[in-house]
Amino acid sequence: MTRATVFVAEKRTGRSTLGHIDKALLPKEGVVETNSFVVSVPKFDLSFQPTEASLYLTPACNLSCSYCYIVPFLKEADSSLTTEQWKSIIDDLHDAGVRSLKLIGGEALLRRDIVEIMTHAAKAGILGIELTTNATIQIVSARKTELKIFAEMDIQKIVSASLDSHTAQGNDTLRGKFDDVVEGIMLLRQLGLPISIASVVTTENQENLEEMAEFADNLGIDAYQFNNLVPIRSEQRSLVITNASTRRDIVDRIEALRIKYEATMVVVNRFVPAPNIEETVFTRIAQLKDVSRSSLTGCPAGTREVYVLPDGKLVACPMFIQFPEHHSRESIAKKSFADVWTEDDRILAFREHITTPKLFGACSTCAAGSVCKGGCRAMTYFQNGELEDKDPRCLVED
Image (cartoon, rainbow, N blue to C red; front, side):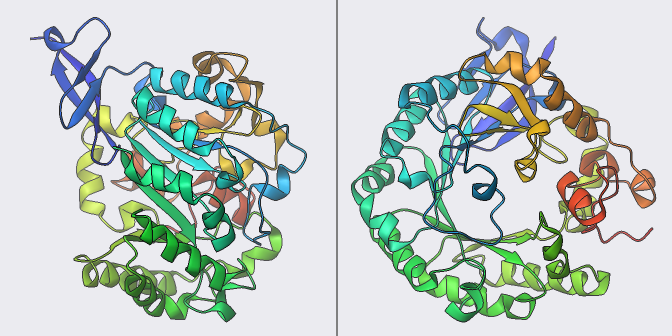
């Protein structure tokens, strides 16, 4: 029996896994759809088959958050892509195997055509949409009609907002408008939308993780994500928690919160690379050669996830938006996505760091190395100045 390697996208979550299927069961177009899954033959090499895409729909925003890696560097960007151009891009991405979208800005809800874009994505076969918004009450109120339509769409969906503290005093020096965001979140809940809160864990809020989670749970939040700060500006490096003992303690505390709230709220630990949390799982995956070399493992930049800028150009990694040399030379509004994804020298150069990483020190002998692939390249670059260093979040000792 000849078996084909396939990507299996779960309709309930939009997430992809790797599997195999008898080639005889595949139609000519290479796609099988069931009530629960969409099974499709990869359109590209396994190591850079995309399954997700982040669409930066506009550089405009009503806030000026200090952590923002997008707006300060795209103020002069050509954001004139029309609704029809974004629809065409979504069709192109879906044909390439993308099944999950993140709609981002700037502030994505500033686009008046946001619901038209989301509706088209669902009709095109996209299985999941994450709408990222600052969730200020002014923005949410202005798009109440559109958000109600989104809530009623038969698609996996979530609205993601950022708060870095459970108090206005702790949040507003970094993000701004805590009270407005909380009010906006409550309106989103009234509209029937599932909500996720993302928090960046730093030296300034590390003592308050439990209070932050409790605050979110009391609001009725569906998911809480703890992230690490990527210091895109040199003055932010002092906010990064580098002490290994402190990091281990924080990992343990987040894991305890995951267990504590598992009945009411999903807690996601992205404070460290995943092998540090479930090393036995990653070690087992490392034995599955197709899986370990696929885009489903390691950093998603230029491999699993596509990042489309407001002008339709790709950026290899969103943390490198400030560097035009990491933007594709051409826009996928003018040239096919497949051509840019496989031929653009800037995308290919960055991808090489992910698909054929140079692993040093403990990374070179770590059982999870072929799955982790050295972790986040942006963290190593902005913290240490080198793309090839190991992820500074890693808890494995050299």
